[in-house]
Image 1 (cartoon, helix red, strand yellow):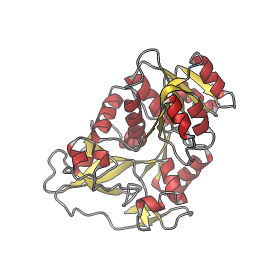
Image 2 (cartoon, helix red, strand yellow):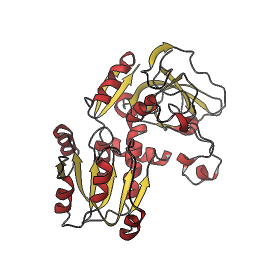
Image 3 (cartoon, one colour):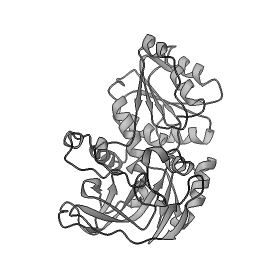
Image 4 (spheres, one colour):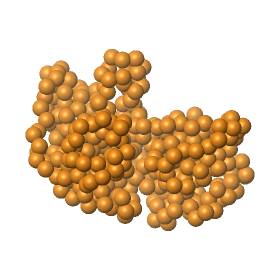
Length: 341
C-alpha cells in the first residue's frame, strides 16, 4: 500500500510503498482509509518536538485522525463488520486497566497511539483495535468527519470540561478560529449558554468564527486584551480555550481571565510562564487537553449527525501530502486538511 512515511526529523515525509497491515490478534480491525486529517501536531512531529515523548522508531507512517470502511476484523470482533463506515478513536486501549474501566480510556496505562508512537493512517489501510472504532451512518463520508477523530475530539473534550463553569451570563474566549477553533466554537454553542468571544489575527478566520456561531469576534491586533476586558465589564472571562498555545497568545489569554477563571490549553509550541503568586492570588487554573475518551467521540458524532457541529475541510489526494503540509505550515489552510487515498 501507499503510505506517507517520516524518515528523518526536520525533513518532509515521503510517499512510498509498504506492506499492508495484517490481522494478528482477535480484536484487531483493519480500516480502509477514506479520509485522514492533517493536524498541526503532524508539523510538530516532523520538527522533532515529539521525539523524546513518542520514542517511535523511524521510518513510520504519520496520521492520527482517521475514518474509513472496515476492511477486515479479528475473530473476536462483533460490533462492526466488513464494509461498515467508522471513525477511529486515536488510541488503541486495553480495556482492563483502571482508566479504561472508569471510562477514562484516553489515559489507558498500556495504550498505543497510531500516528504518534506507531504507524498511522496517512496510508491506504490502518490497523487499530475493536475498542477504537465508532460505527457511523453509512451515508457519512469518511473524508467529511476524519479530523473529528482528534481535532474535533480534543476541542469537544476541552469544551466539555469548561461547560461546568459556563452557566448563563458567563463568557468563554476562544483563541484561534482555525482547524480546531472552529470546532470548539460550535461545541461551546452546543453545550453551553456562555457568550462566545473569538480572538484571531486573521479577518478570514474571524469570518469563519462568525459562521460557526461566535457571539463576538475580536481582531488580535494588540488591543485584544482591552477589548475582551471591555466586553466582560472589566472582569475577564470564566474560561479561555486556547487553540494556539504559542507566540503572544499564552500571555494575552492569561490576561483575559477573571479571578478563579480556567485556562484550557489545546494548542502548543510555546512555553507557559507565569509567576506562582499570580496563580495563587487570583486562583486561576490551567488545564491540559489531549484527545478525549471514546464516549466523547461518540457524543461528538451525535452532534455531527444532528448538524450542530460541521467540519470545514480542504481535501488533498494522499500523494499531495507535502502540499497540504506546506499549506498548513504557511497559514493558507483554513479549517482542516484531509488526505484521501
